[in-house]
Each structure stands twice: as structure tokens, then as C-alpha cells.
Length: 290
Image (cartoon, rainbow, N blue to C red; front, side, top):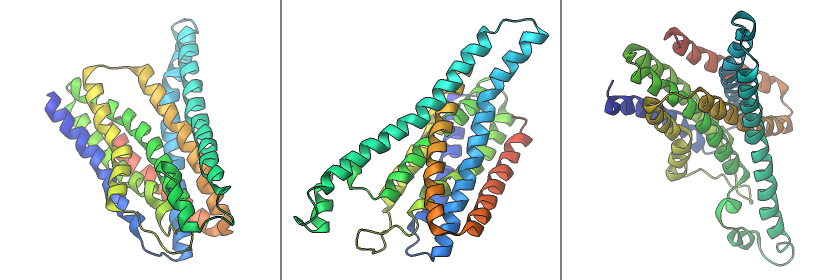
């Protein structure tokens, strides 16, 4: 398949992430709906953690099997294991460091607030990400993690197209496109019901939502272009584990939010909905033989 047609497939698979983004513009959802949306996002992300870790572990499992079946050494397995461990560590701890840095950036400015300026003036003093609400910053973290995951998916599309497996590439686009639609919802679920410091509802602008869609879905296109040029299993392992680490951190944050609602039943319902959505769309990819 030509590079132009391959890139078109990658663009189609990535752009479907936009389908779930309008959820973030819900003006003032009921607390029950907000808790359910948050829990469903956790379910989708938990599925993605399983999906990326199982894919990243596969070459390690194959290398360990070859030690017994083909009497190979442990070098390949150890190499992939180091990539696996390093990717998860970097993905998880980099976000821990980011949150600490962001906490200092926002907390440091709060020292000038009490008794010296109004809340609106305090917000105005903040610039860049420090001026964003916690919900927006969490949406950005989710978009980054999903973007890393989608880059690896793009590699699979590009490699299939480059090897002449047009039918497989097309089915992968359908499956990954459905995946991305649910992932778009996962990005913006924390934004539903976002409020300012006065408690007034805040709806994200379309520009912000499109930016999150570009961060989350754009890497599918980039991965497709790279995958069409060359095949690299180690590169796939690195990006899959980076995605797993970052998504794990986000899941921790979302579960913390869910715990404040004190509605274990809604958390269970939402988790179930998100997990089922993830596995159903993954079934499309499996049907493609991937």
C-alpha cells in the first residue's frame, strides 16, 4: 500500500477520538452522572493498561520461551525486560514529578493570596498550565498517556500496510478507530461539571477540546507514518510501557476523585461500563487477526 493511502488510514483511526470529546462540554451534570462518567473513564483506562502491558510483555514472553525451545540465551529477554521496566518507571514517575512541580507552581503563588488579593486577582497572576483548573490538567495527563498508546497502535497500522496486508490494515483502522472514540470520552470525563473557584460551572472551549484530541489522537497518524518506513519491536515496547505508566498514574488520580463521592456502587457501575466498552472494541481488532 502506498504511503499516502497508509497515512489516510492513520488519520481516520486517529480522528475518531474527537467523537467522545463533546462530553466535556456538559454544562452542569447531576452529581450522580458526574460520578458515573468519572468511573467509566477509570474503566476505559484500566482496560488500556491491560491492553498495553499485555502487548508490551509479549516479546519478553516469546524470548523466555525461546530459551527452552530453541536454546537461546537470556540476553534478548533481559534487554526487553529492561525496556519494559524503564518505560513503566519513566511513564509513572515523570508524572509524579510533574504533579509535584505543578503543586509548587500553584502553591507558591497561593502564599501571596490570603489577605492580599481577591481570588480573581490570584488566578490572574498564574500563567500557563498553573492557571488551568485541576480538571483540565488531569485531562491533559490522560491525553498524553493515550497519545503514547495510540502511537504504538499507529505503528501496527503502518507496518501492516507496508507489508501489503491491506485487509488487516483496514480492519485495524476500524478497531482502533472505535477504541479512540471511547478514549476521547476518557480524556474529557474529568471536565464534566468543572467549576471555577467561585463554584460556577466552566465548560472547556472547543479549542481546548481539539488540542486534547490532537495530543491523544495525533500520535496515531505519526506512528502510522513511522511504521510504514520501518519495523521496530523495541520502539513499540518503549512507547507501550510509557503509556502504561502514565495511564496508571491517571487511574490513581481518578480513583481518588471517585473516593470523595462516597458512592462505591456508582464506581462499580462505571468501571463495568468502561471495561466492557474497551473489550468490545478490542474484539474488533482481534477479529482482524492482530
